[in-house]
Image (cartoon, rainbow, N blue to C red; front, side, top):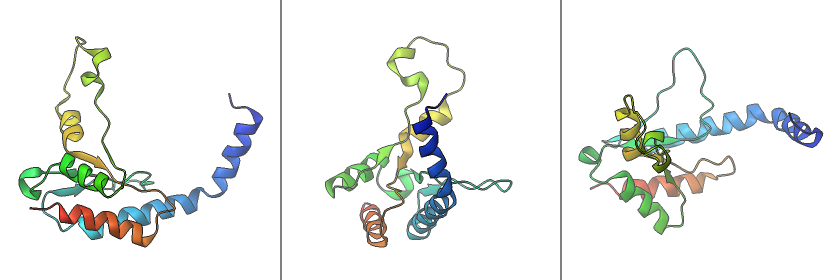
Length: 141
């Protein structure tokens, strides 16, 4: 249940939903064009049967092809005061679930090891996006 205040905020956000999704998709498209030619950098494809909101742009990094790890890129961005973060830690690797049965998990572990969430706020300027891309490109060895 939502309070009246939270419901009003939600209704207000619905009015700008399409604009936010449009901007998120623009940001994803920029990153894909700016970084998609780099060996070892991959983006999540869009399913042919739907339309992704692209609320968060994430990449996976193959260190053997790119020449640097996801963590190398994250730290390079951090040195430039650009926030990024690894993909979410799988549940079966969380200490609270130690000793619990795990079925599968290899894909989640690989995504956590190689995945990086890039800055993708709708208020980012073109210069902001270009700066992020420039730092990432500089990491390639």
